[in-house]
Length: 246
Image 1: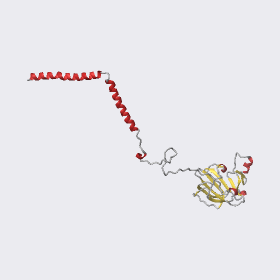
Image 2: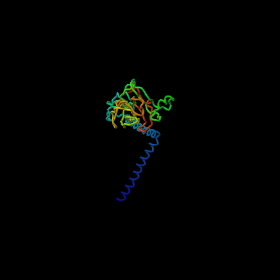
Image 3: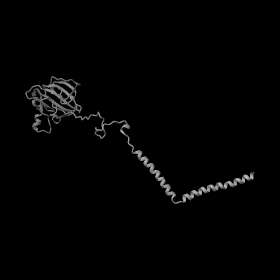
Image 4: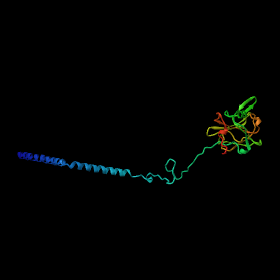
């Protein structure tokens, strides 16, 4: 029995090897054919192209505004190209200019002008103030009513009252500091109506024209000065005043 089994096993082994060799030979014969490799390449290419088409179709899908939870008006646009909300309001901020410190220009004249180093000798001489034995360049504009009466003095621009003083030389004084850094100074005043720390708007009445010792010969007048900051240099008011806008 053992000899028969051994013999049986010896007979089966060659059959298995022969079957494997037959399968291998069949693959070799298949691969040896000329059309196998081109066919395999075409099939792979078709699969790759199919995957690319599917990917491109997925990339073309758009996301709607509703998907993002955004609701935008179709008839309003912002300046940067994006659409603005329905309740948006266009705001154009216009900076405030400095106006005349009185109401009626036709009733008031310039009595003493600003000392301008580039002006003619005659104009510079007229803008010198003599106080005692000393001549001082006039760093402001003095306004005087044509009939010599006391007129109302207005805030030339909105700002905060940063000084209210009574000076023995220049008379009652009001100083207003503005948001643009300029400071307007009003001297030779009477009947001052504002207090230090008060907020005033352009055109508000702050006092009336009065008298002072520094420009005594000028009578009732307003000394109007503009400075670059509280302790800054004086600026010719005529270069910044907007006489058309009060």
